[in-house]
Length: 356
Image 1 (cartoon, rainbow, N blue to C red):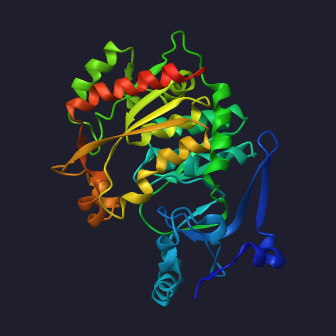
Image 2 (cartoon, rainbow, N blue to C red; image 1 turned 30 degrees about the vertical axis):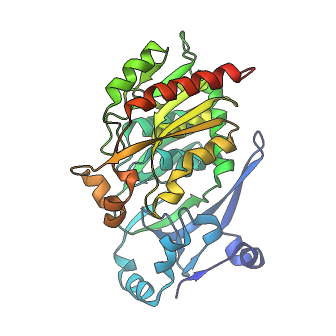
């Protein structure tokens, strides 16, 4: 059976402990542990299994205990034993990883912070093949800023073996935010700054605001800059958030960039109503981010409308039952009466703030 090793057990095991390296960034007082050696993993969980069949939940658990429970079953162990010699092998790489569905929130908060501890001059970075060109360019830029040259190696949806490779632990959200906010220092300055930003989701297959055009008309009359983040490189996206005093958006990954906002910025989310147990965690994602970043948070609810057909990527990576039942995988429509209420609340909030 595959055995999970706790941190306390790891400290007592000199042989295993010697396989871990520690990276530290003094500027933000953060430390990251790397496993270096030979291991196996799949590009969904990025949960390394050593050649001695050890795992490390406290370092590499990204989603939840449920997501990796099957690794510790007899059936998985037997199947793994039979197939491990046939896995494709990578050598001398750094497994940074990326979300297989190319989810921007996950790529930004879960995976990207792991590159901040790289200190070699040249590395081969392992990511999923689905990672966008913009995000790869962002990784290259951040590494080059630190004098690190990288090339990319790609994973598909399979199990792989890694020899003489390293994989950094997953950091907690607060640590990730501390690292990511340091990027603000290298964001290009804009000639024109916009206090109020509305983020569109017109390219999304779900959670689009169906009567968005009517809302945009009112927002423009009230001084909002309307942007579609997919039209900008990531550093340019971030520059809008750095200067904003109000961000309004339908629930979605565009709100992940709110971590780059200054403390006190208003984050206003248009969100579906919770209708299932699957929605509980998702519904508080950006509220929790706002709290960690000392941002002011407001939520406005919209009615949900079924999606005619989800994208191939959504159907591939999201549980079918969740996709069909959760309001967070449907589109939205906002009552006309809510338009003026949103603008009124935002105006009142701004007027009541002494500084922002």
